Image (tube, rainbow, N blue to C red):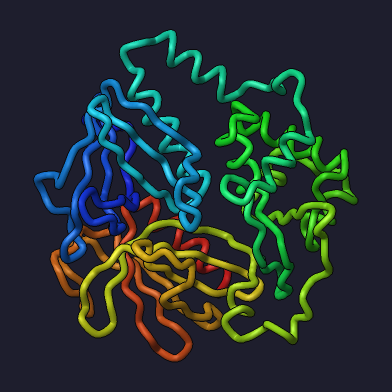
Length: 353
C-alpha cells in the first residue's frame, strides 16, 4: 500500500485506565501501529496513540475475554498490553499476520518462517485425544457450550467450528489453523465430538469435511456424550430470533449516522440472507445483541456523491457514503472506509433486496 501503510481499518480497542471498549481507526506501518479517534465521521489527527512494534509479542487467538472471541493481544517491550478486536475471524487473522510480519520485519528469515508456518500441515506427535477432551471440559480454561441458533432452530450445549479451532490453537494443541482443523476432524472420527444442525450434518453425509467448513462460524458441534436434540422452535422462537437465523453473507465495521442526534458511530454490520436482514451491533458492548436492524425486502441502496456533503448527512464526513432506504421509507446513512468497500457492500445488499 502507498506511503508505507501495510494495513488499515477499524479495530475495537480496550482502554488502558478504564477498561471500556472503543472503535478506533488503525494504521499499520513497518515499525508502528497508529490509532485514531473518529469525530463527526472523520478521522481526527494527530493519532490518539501509537504502539511501537519493536520487541512486541502477539497472541492470536486470544481467549482472555469470553464474550470477545476475535481478539488480538499485543505486549510491548515495556510489558504494556493492548487488546484489539476485529469484526470477523478472517479479518482478525489478516491483522495478526500483517502485525507479526511488521514485528519481525528486520529478520527476513523469521518472516519466511511465518509464511511456511501459515501453510504448514503437521499434527503434533503423540497426541492424547483423551487429554484434549479432558481439557475441553475444564470449567476454567475449557470450551463453554451454549445455545446456538441455525436456520430458526436453537441447539443446546453447542460451540462454533471456528471457536473450536481457536481453542485448539490457544491451548497449544495445534500450531496453525490447518493443524487444528485436522485435529478437530480426528476428534469427530473418534466420536468425541459430533456435528449439530443441518449444515454440519450435511457436510458429514457428503464427506465435505474441508478446512473451509470445519473452521467456519456457522458450523455447530457438541460433545458426543452431551448431545441433545434441538429445542422446540415454538419454545424460544421470536421475531428477533427469526431475523437472526439467516446465513451470514458479509460483516464488517462501518460508520453509521444516528437517526435523532445525527452523530456518527462505528458499528459492526452483519448482512444475512434467508431471511434478508441488515443488523448492526455496538462493538463497545459486551453482549452480542444487535442495537438495530431492518428487513432488506423492498429496500433501495445507492452510493452518495463524494464531492460535498449530501442532503440528509451531517458532519464533516470523509466520503465513501451510501444510503439504504427501507420499505417503510426510513433512511440509513452509512460510511465505508474506502470506495472498494462501499462497492462491495452495495453489491451484496442489492442481491438481497
